[in-house]
Image 1 (cartoon, helix red, strand yellow):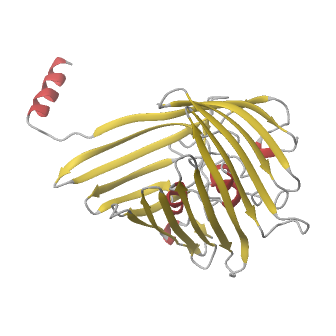
Image 2 (image 1 turned 120 degrees about the horizontal axis):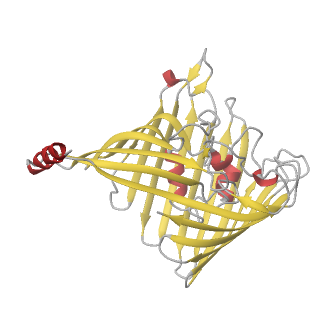
Image 3 (image 1 turned 60 degrees about the vertical axis):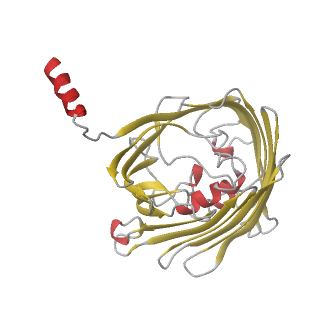
Length: 349
């Protein structure tokens, strides 16, 4: 053992390069209930219960590691591995759960149905390696989409699990993550930024085994001072196409956000079209948010599909906060109105 340590110390003394590795994670759990028995807001019953890695949580509990190595000339090699778990059971969590008001088969957090990962997968949330430098960054693997980052730049809850924007519109399409994706992000240029992601058809993530499809995802945004604006579009070859235009303005006493989303199927028919409008107000350690998202193309002939959210957060520190949320999932895609509440604690480590 001593010889090994001495050898490592000698190697370090020569100036050899080592990756800087960071361990991180989130622990999030809540208690609450819904008013419908049949899987309302993703819960198994309408009884008061512990809630973890669910629609009514601020986020999914997770663990991860990320690191980078200086290659010289400002170039870095990077990696990021991240998996999810439930604080209620300790079990690993993948692409499971239900989007509020979403079509049958969709999953919580707007995970791509094509890229859904079973809970037994260790790094179900992120598994990437890439390069970064003055040119921007290039990452390959399972990762968040360009459309996700576009929406996250202005969305008021920080893309919480209970975000009505995410749960109504699924980040402009099938969800926030894709498998086997290649994503390039530009550096910030005077407040402007852009991103491009492609899922190669050869990996068979979309389409069928006999006719696999590729997918692209593009975004352009601007953020400077109180203004954030972003446009994203994604499309599966001869398949679903989604577009999201959104932005926010910070007045100081409150931040207001507005967005418009449209999703079309492979035939070019709109399956989702709607808007979101909300405001967030900080008051000392508290932050209060009201948000609504309406899909005007309803699955129920008698009504549009409107979701509402009331959120209150109290910061205990920079990394820990208590949250309370009331969520209303309007009748439309779902068979009936569903509402629920939760009181939770989130710690980022």
